[in-house]
Length: 335
Image 1 (cartoon, one colour):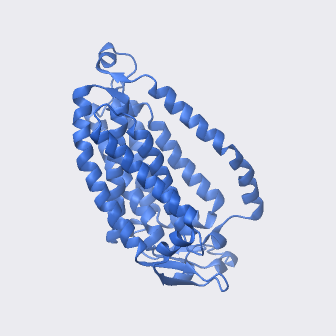
Image 2 (cartoon, one colour):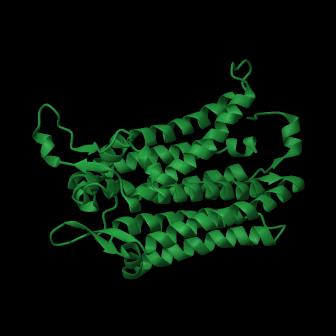
Image 3 (cartoon, one colour):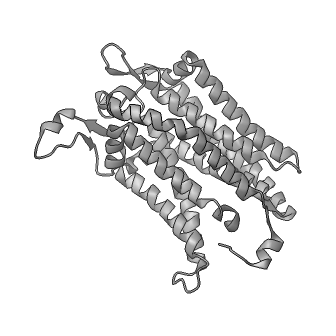
């Protein structure tokens, strides 16, 4: 299992860093507010992924002081803390965070701080909202589901994959319970709407449900994503010889998450709402970079399809040779 995921740990870490960098360039006010205000939350997330990187590379090194078991515990910590906190952070896009924004402070030479966090917990307060925790737990079980599907696709060992299929049933069921609970609650709860004329933020009943209805393309993307995830899980459970579930569920996850991000920010919606001061909520309009920066990023984004193609090629290349017990017994590079 460790050798299977060890082949690709760099992809997850690189994706996280790229996500943060892209948000910083596109929405600097969001970056300074969230990463600068909720820094304990983001620092713990980042530290958990640093533990992941260190664990993969050092657990089998000769002479490591902590011992292999310690590094494996680090991997478990990353596998629990990372997904739960990331899910909780994303959930605040729908539930709100405790911060204030005052752009007039830019002229204050003594303290030119635009945004301030409203409490001393600096992001960890997100875990006091039950719905943030619900999505965090859903992401945790989703990570386990995708990991199980990946093992089934990548490891050739019938005894092991049979155990994976049994574990898939339990983890998929728990994921669906928490994910559906969060989605249903979000669709029928009040959302953070923006008046397009006055730019005032106000609470609107069924806002995110309305967004899906008024943006059918995003609704279709969301439904396709959900269906792909369910298909990947269901066929893997029902068909013993089916091993490609990770491709369907993985692509479906990307579609679903993308749809949720779009519905959180499009259609006159505050994508990073303040639960303390509604008018401090961040929208696409009041938190984005300058026109020059956005134009530059638009040109750079032309390269995105090539990057996606490279990632696909790299994954296919790494997956071409499945991990077998014989390979592990022969030695060579292992984690």
